[in-house]
Every structure is written in structure tokens, then in C-alpha cells.
Image 1 (cartoon, helix red, strand yellow):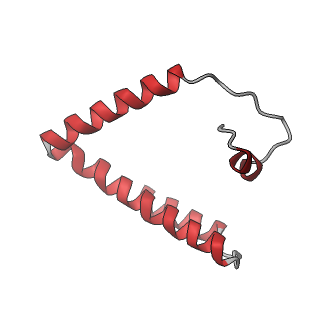
Image 2: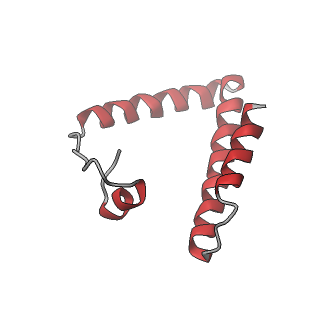
Length: 88
């Protein structure tokens, strides 16, 4: 049910989106999210996949901790941050 609610919320959020480029980006994000969800559900059942996901997660956390934190301007939006390369 949580997946269905999440998908419905995202579709509702983009209901009035008419720009082709942004529509394609939203579709790609939806496919990526569903793929990630399916992978996360399958991982505990497959020992090799589970071990690789845990390894990837560990490396990602270590890399994130090693990265210097960036300060954001209080009035910036996610789109402005993405355009400038700033991460939240």
C-alpha cells in the first residue's frame, strides 16, 4: 500500500506538467524508483545480491561522510540547486 500511495502522490504532483523534457525526466525517475524498490524487495532473498547491496551501501556512506558539506542559500529551490550542482 505504501508504494501505491507514493506512486499516486508523485503522479498527482506532476499532473499539470506539459513540458516534454520535464515529462521525460519524471518518467525516468518513476522507472528508476520502481526498479530500486523491486531490487530492495528481492535483495534479502538472494544472498549474493544482499551482500553486494550492503557493500555498495557501506561504500556510499563512507564517500558521503568524506565529502565536504556545502552551504545552501536559504531561499534556493531544489531546481536551482540542481542547476548549480549544489546538493541538499
